Amino acid sequence: MTVSSPVNDDAGLQDVGVVNKTRVAALAEIDQADFSWFHVKVCMVAGVGFFTDAYDIFAISIASTMLGYAYGNATVPGTGTKPLHMLDARQDLGIKVATPVGTLVGQLLFGWLADMVGRKRMYGLELIIIIIATFGQALGGSGLRAVNVIHVLIVWRVIMGVGIGGDYPLSAVISSEFSSTRIRGRLMTAVFANQGWGQFVASLVALIIIVAYKDALERETTYVDYMWRLLIGLGCVPGAIALYFRLTIPETPRFTMDVERNVKQAAQDVENFLATGSYYVDPDAVYEPAQAPRATRRDFGSYFSKRENLLLLVGTAYSWFALDMAFYGLSLNSSKVLEIILGANSNAFKNLYQIAVGNVILSVAGYIPGYWATFLVIDRWGRKPVQLMGFVMLTVLFIVMGAAYDKMVNHSGVAGQRAFVFLYCLANFFQNFGPNTTTFIVPGEAFPTRYRSTAHGISAASGKLGAIVSQVGFAKMIDIGGQGAFFGHLLEILAFFMLTGVFSTLLIKETNQKTLEDISNERQDQFVTGTPLRQQRPKD
Image 1 (tube, helix red, strand yellow):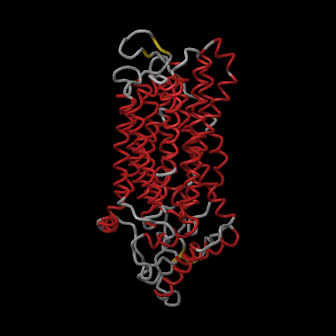
Image 2 (spheres, rainbow, N blue to C red):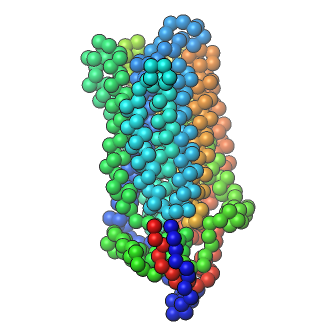
Image 3 (tube, rainbow, N blue to C red):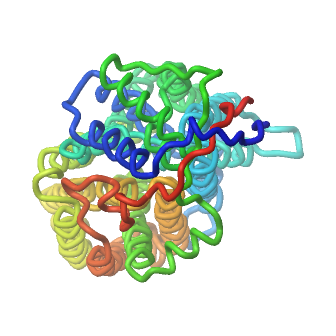
């Protein structure tokens, strides 16, 4: 990229006060805008990414059981004998932890890149990575000696995770920066709520595939090799549909204004997309970079060395870490949890059918209602009360479930199992009607534009670190004392992390009904400190 040298042109210089007023007026138009079709479009374009992400992430919970029938040669824990149709512990862990590992990398990388080169330039690239990696998984196979199909899947799922990770900061900041103040919480919640629909559709598709292959399964279990490939491969479809819209979404005016420092172009963009839902950039237009705070290592250190800003980042990051310990620990192991509660069936069709139906019930009874309960109150109650309530309820529920696990599941018959499933669904509900939604929203609002995506990426990556720790913990501890015997104690451990989430929530600030600039802890009336030097627009 080359930029022509600045040309001193007194006629082109603008008074600092005028530039600041232009910036404030443009921001006010965004913040006070009525809900429009453009907001719906942003919600749909960003939301379909989370639908795809959730489908691809959580389909593996059911697919791993299918893979066990196709490639598993595990043994009964503690005996070393009697092969089971399931993946061994290392294979199961590798399959499930691969995506969070890639996601952590993608969140940090794309979060930083979106602040450096722009939201628009990165948006769509992460979806391309997801599509290619998902397709690669569906076609994965074994070599004669050198490579196992499970290892191939692990590699592809790490790559897919990088793309999924990129979707978190990009979709968060794009939806927050385009939204008006009064509906921002609901708009961001609606985007993130697509995760619940993705989980539901993954379970529903699995159920349809299992029923379609019923007769074949009862003849020969190797037909699951078709089934898991269909289940995972269909995750390409929503991503492919959304790709065009991702690549054509406009750059956010806040990025154009505060990072590119082109206040004039940003003001024009606001007028265009609020009026018509479209935008136009003249490649020959005069480019006027104002003097304003820039994202540098020194400026980053200066901003986050302030106690209030640092504690806020610690609060958003640790809250997400604590939440994902439970959310991913349980969600990625939902099939195993259902087998522990309800018992595994020796018939392949009946076992897979039971797992798929159980996952559909968990989605309908817990995940989806939780997101939309948040949607109803997020712009009235605020983010902090919802997050505190969720962590408190999860602490109580996990203590009760952990303490009563053995009695309800093993000694109270069907009634006890149903009671445990009810509490489990209630925990899923308060994960989403609580910190799973708010940990996504707050870091997408609470930091200045030049660091908003980076800070969101750091917070989200902290969450995926929690997911990785949780997956390793589940794999290593769940069978202590016998198959699934330690599950109750794992719930008690999760209760401790939910309690720590209560305290980390106290570090975050309330962002409800405040403009992004008011939240950023920077003076806005003097944000632009110097008049712009006129130069040609950058050319690629």
